[in-house]
View 1 (cartoon, rainbow, N blue to C red):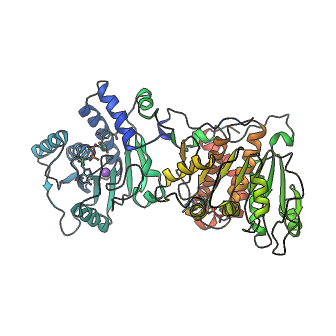
View 2 (cartoon, protein in one colour):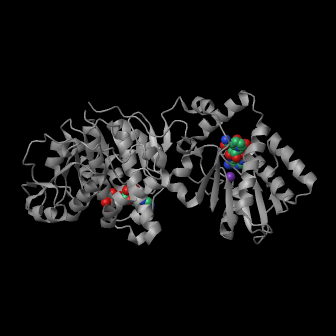
View 3 (spheres, rainbow, N blue to C red):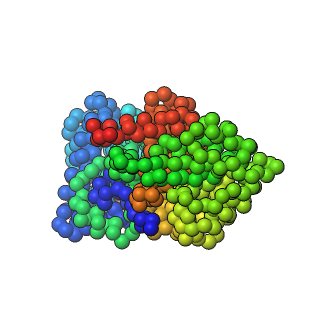
Length: 518
Ligand SMILES: NC(=O)C1=CN([C@@H]2O[C@H](COP(=O)(O)OP(=O)(O)OC[C@H]3O[C@@H](n4cnc5c(N)ncnc54)[C@H](O)[C@@H]3O)[C@@H](O)[C@H]2O)[C@@H](O)CC1
Ligand SMILES: Nc1ncnc2c1ncn2[C@@H]1O[C@H](COP(=O)(O)OP(=O)(O)O)[C@@H](O)[C@H]1O
Ligand SMILES: [K+]
């Protein structure tokens, strides 16, 4: 019996929680309802922001502070006061006629202190650093042309911009600019990570992402998020609870899972090799690879430990049929390099109730998606495959689209990209927060398919949390790319290199989080 789909990420590790604007508001309201004065929270939060800014900004730098009408602006006024009193040259830009009472109070006090105010931006950039406190999670409509203009000007000045909570103009939940947004060098996100900051579209705006923790009590977090399926951000701590899959001293290879990979064609023999090498890196106990019979030698040379299933092939060199019954395998991964003419075997595998992962051409053959299958199913589309699979789901809202697809297909949907999203049928969502554009090349996904297939074969055999392994595999794959990019540059992240380094990089990742652990 396959273990129920559950989520990783401790419920109270703030680093792993993603919230919408509405959830953050709910959490804040709980704090205020339980007696924490709004102004007290603001002082605490803004004090922490100011402390961080003093670490980041050398004395003597001229600082411009963009102050909005709400509490994002109020935070920034408190920061302006603290920086001013520490001797920084600060100027406040507050192009608003109205403001919330607390914002007004801090504005009056800043005037009383003699901090210079300006209504409008000057022609040329007067500051070394800008603090962006125009809007945070309260942005509720498109920016007016005047405000869009102001943001455009700041962006054209290319000076250092540090955004408070979110880059102003960015939608808190979708990460979409409304219609423009500050391009920050660094974003100091307050309290809990906002969902929008981790979307592909936001990556051009957020810069370096830091979270300013302000000790939100666990019960307030629970109260704010318990009514919706959890949304988590994959953290090393959580992922290393699932990886590496424990391997007791007395174990034999079949207890480490048996994966069947159905892949390859004469057109794409390499996809089968890369997927097989990805599976090897996963530690799977037994690997059987079904390929067109003409590829048998190629695969054997590349992956001598694999059992090859030479399949009858079409004139075009694609798999015509599977020569055996699909029994004895713990998991099946199908797709890499099949070409779209392998409909027969995709339907054969799909119509079983076995646990499977569909990638690449298996997805193209199953597109557009219809129906559900009883077995545990993982789909790993990139945006191109997505458009064929779920043409009705709007990809500009990646989060909602992934959640809807997971429910429609009753599958774990891995929507790959710069920030890969993993959605579950129950609506739970996880985002992989770090990767490298070095992975944006053909073959990276084939490696991921093999890696996930191998992990899931082990997971099924040992009755582990399969969705935790999908998340951990996505994280591991991206972290290995990131490690290579940092060590040797982005061009070093080619798929073969990835397969060579997955296992050793996992060892490094473990050492970084838990020195001494094997
Ligand atoms: N946990 C947190 O996130 C905390 C949040 N705080 C700050 O409070 C912020 C949220 O404060 P608010 O709810 O006041 O929201 P904002 O400060 O983000 O701005 C909302 C204000 O801007 C106006 N507004 C919204 N969209 C507009 C548009 N397109 N054009 C012109 N005006 C627009 C609204 O009418 C409202 O007055 C957070 O982002 C954060 O900076 C802090 O007070 C402390 C804790
Ligand atoms: N810009 C990017 N930044 C980080 N990771 C990326 C980026 N583009 C793609 N990736 C990752 O690289 C892999 C590409 O997979 P895929 O598109 O399926 O490759 P292929 O099908 O050619 O093997 C995915 O894991 C994806 O998350
Ligand atoms: K902001």
